[in-house]
Length: 67
Image (cartoon, rainbow, N blue to C red; front, side, top):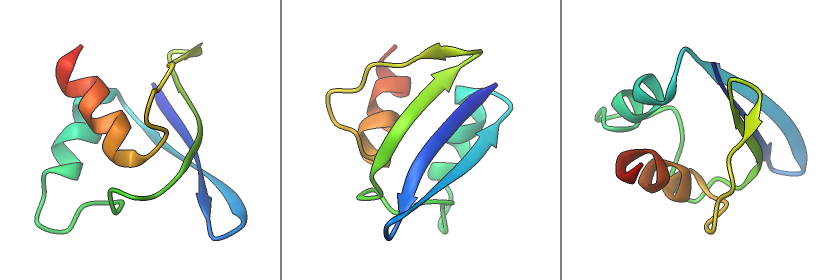
């Protein structure tokens, strides 16, 4: 399970996906779940923290596409 903790304004929220592929597919839709600039606080994949150089949804998308 991919668990994303992100900021919505100044409020931390959590969104979960079945896996990284599901997140990538949804982000490729005409109306994705998130704008690219949304700031990520933390992201884990099956409980393991993913280290991101760019802590935005765009950075996570690129990380998952290139892994």
